[in-house]
Image (cartoon, rainbow, N blue to C red; front, top):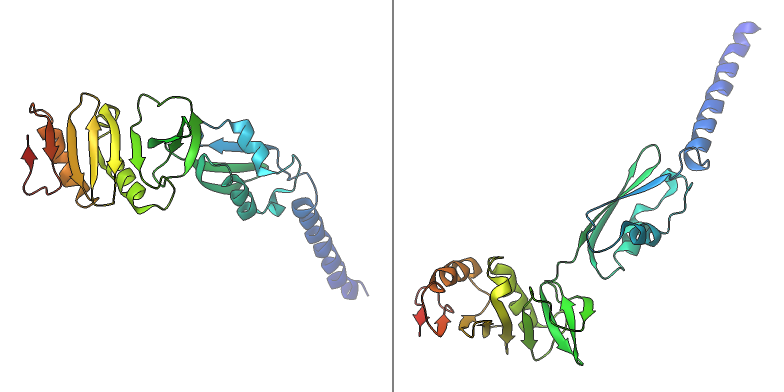
Length: 222
């Protein structure tokens, strides 16, 4: 009789252990969220990000839908991307990449700060001193001319960007720059950005009123 009960007893014991473990992981607050660790934020406060996750303290970590949390975080306009993961036993790890301000666009007497995709990240009363003014006919995300102009700004050496007053783009192929000292640069299209940036850096050491790098193989200085 004892031998017959032994397998049943072991099965019950195993089921009890598994059931307890499942309860601890999926239903109990024992392995619940105790901390939300935020990595990569500069302009956005960690507290703002924690609130945006929508995850309450004590929520079983295993039941947190990390994809849903990432979707919530991406609704914050300053966030370009977000990756959420679990750090056992009780930490939710949030890694974000903030949108980097690239230029400003005049809008109704104020200035919209945009990132490399043309997404507005903020509104300022004046042009920030380190960002160029972007002038295009259709200042909105997805506009080809705006996209070309932003690509040009992104291709410029970081040391040169603060010296740019305006970037003008009547079309994607006719981008030009106006420096704060009054000099102008004919850039052309967004093709061969590394070549154009390298050549322009060298040309700016020569005194002139305008520089044409639209065709990197045949540059013009006036």
